[in-house]
Length: 59
Figure (cartoon, rainbow, N blue to C red):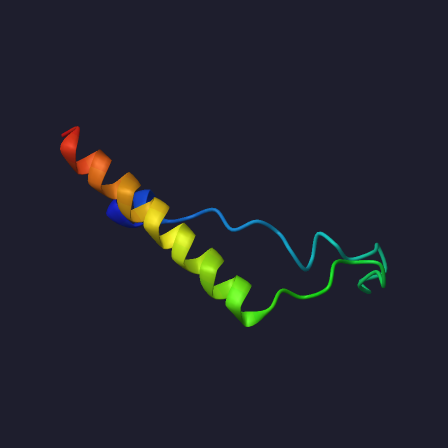
């Protein structure tokens, strides 16, 4: 049960943007810079850590 509660839903980024024939559309958004990706990862980790802490406090 711990594994299921700790899993995160990952949005579909690549396959959802694909056309029906399996190729990516040329009008898709440009890739994010490494700095933006690091900031996003840190934000997600912080939110998840706070969620876990709040969940432990409620027990």
